[in-house]
Amino acid sequence: MNTILFMITTSLILSILLTSLNLWLALTSPDSEKLSPYECGFDPLGSARLPFSIRFFLVAILFLLFDLEIALLLPLPWATQLQSPPSTLTWTYMIILLLTLGLIYEWTQGGLEWAE
Image 1: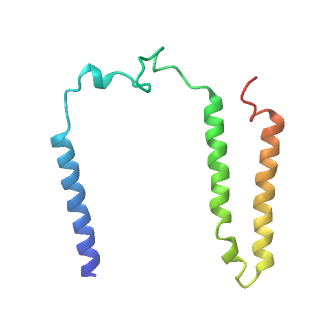
Image 2: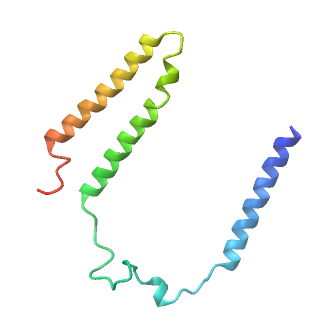
Image 3: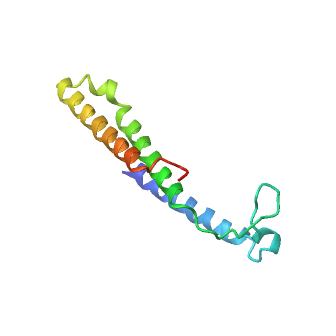
């Protein structure tokens, strides 16, 4: 119990110390050079506040979805060593089928077409 209390106290003190140090050392009056947008060393060609196309967000969501699929399927080799491997494989096939049907739906609706 003392070890957990020591770890919590140390973490809390370190967090407060680092946050206070950051606030104390931070530059509070940034100049115009720091406030200007940076585009790979070139002067910006347009406004930095233009809205993004919804396609960027769609691609990001699809990437996260399939990245999550990989994270769910990574422990599968160890899961087949459980008491009922057919049940595990059935759930795995259902996840893959659901995601494949979602991908086919996105494809047929034109959600993956970048240019119209």
